[in-house]
Length: 166
Ligand code: SF4
Image (cartoon, rainbow, N blue to C red; front, side, top):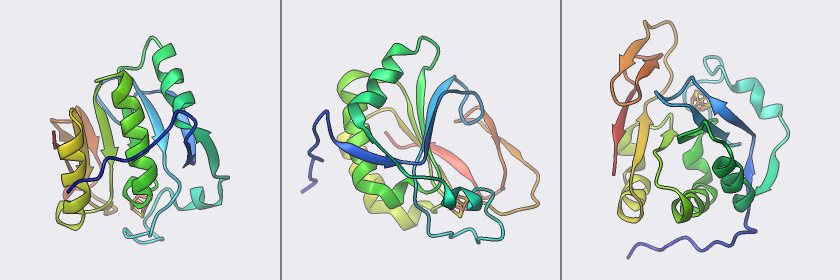
C-alpha cells in the first residue's frame, strides 16, 4: 500500500535555496527549489555543487513556498533540484503534496540517481501525483552537452535524460 504523506500548511521543510524565476533548467520560467543533502555519488571532485554543502540550511513552511509561487505571474513550472532531492524524500513528498493541492503545473525533479536506483520512490510519485518529470543520471564531466526534448534545454552529460513519469 502506498502511504499518502501527511502534512499541514505549517509543515517545515529544509531547503538550501529558492529562486522565483529560473530560466536554466526547463523550457518555461520556473520556480527553482534546491534541496540540502547529497551523498556525492557523482564524485566530490566532479560536483559543481560541492561548495554548496557549506550553505546554511533554511527551514521554511511549504505553504509559504506555494503562496510565493502563486503570487508570481511569470513562473509556470516548479523545478526541484540539488543537491539531491531524493535524499529528502519526506520533504519532497510534502512539497509536492502542497503544490498539488493548488496547482497542476509541471514539477521537474533533477536527480543524480539512475532510474533503476530509485524505482520505489518514482513509483510512489507516479501513483499519487500527475505532471511530474524526472531528470535522471549522474553528472560526468568533460562531455558535450546535448539537447533534451522533454526539458527543452541542454543537459551536461550524455547519460542524463528526462522522462515524464506521470
Ligand atoms: S547528484 Fe548533484 S549535487 Fe550530488 S554529486 Fe551529483 S551533481 Fe553533485
